[in-house]
Length: 79
Image 1 (cartoon, helix red, strand yellow):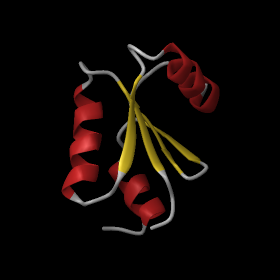
Image 2 (tube, one colour):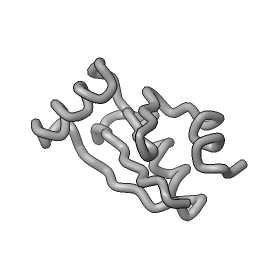
Image 3 (cartoon, one colour):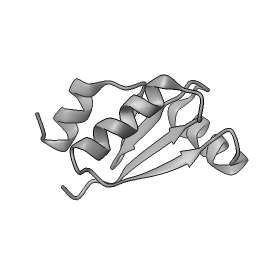
Image 4 (cartoon, one colour):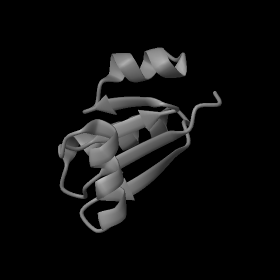
C-alpha cells in the first residue's frame, strides 16, 4: 500500500474517531490533523474537499468526505 492516508478531524467528531480506529485496527498508517487547532490544515482541508465537514480523508490523490468504509477499502485494496 503506497497511498499516503491523511485524516482531517476534530476531537469531538465520532465519525473521525471511527475512521481513525478503523485505520489503526487494520494496521494502516495515517497522518491525523486536528483542524480545530491547526488553521493551515483546516484551510488545506477546505481547499481539497470544498467543504467544512469532518472527517475528510485523503488517500493518495483521492478525497473522501466522511467515513466511507467501502470507498476506503476500494482505494486501499483491503476488505
